Image (cartoon, rainbow, N blue to C red; front, side, top):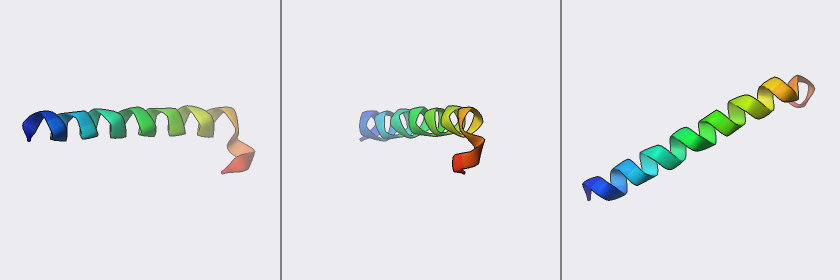
Length: 30
């Protein structure tokens, strides 16, 4: 179960990073 939790945490971190980059590139959309 630890591998699953770490995999989900890693995916969540990637999603947050992508969201932050998109927010910086397109501030008018947010």
